[in-house]
Length: 185
Image (cartoon, rainbow, N blue to C red; front, side, top):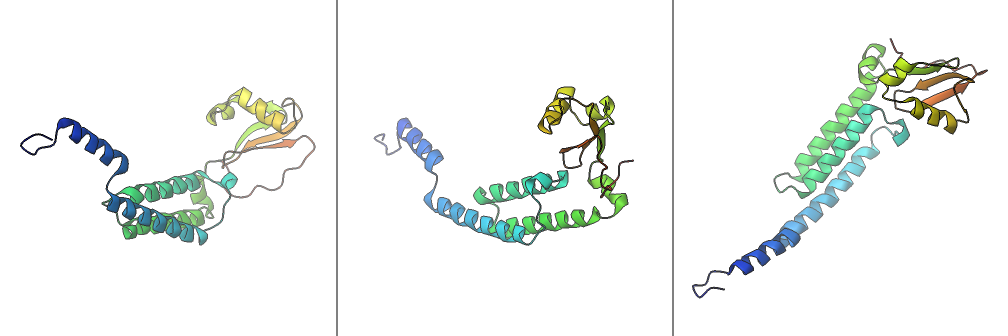
């Protein structure tokens, strides 16, 4: 401390470091309360939405999940965002997601929401154009075939890049079930 009562530069630096690392205790308590409330709110809201496993996530499902995480994460520590504002944002996000999920039931709209199915192998022949369109390499496809017990494409009736990003492999001699959902143009 200087003789005139002002803090020394070293005191200011130490106080700044303590503030950056620890913050202001009442604000910490506010963040803890708001984070807990937002987590419980999100858990309750997700409880009443459609159940979909991670493996079944379509692109719009991933967007909703990431956006919900961003809302909870941002609002939990933002002093300018209340619990109610974050809850309204979560409710609007989940309502929009539910509407999109229902719109997927209309074939004309499904094409715009879900990516089309892509045939990667048909009767042992690899479709290189569709492989490129899916952002896959021949090595990627070969790895998937090995995971399904096929050393190569020769004995594969169909390999389909599904709308949700998985690759279904049907060996020669199988009859595929009728396709459901959107059909590719």
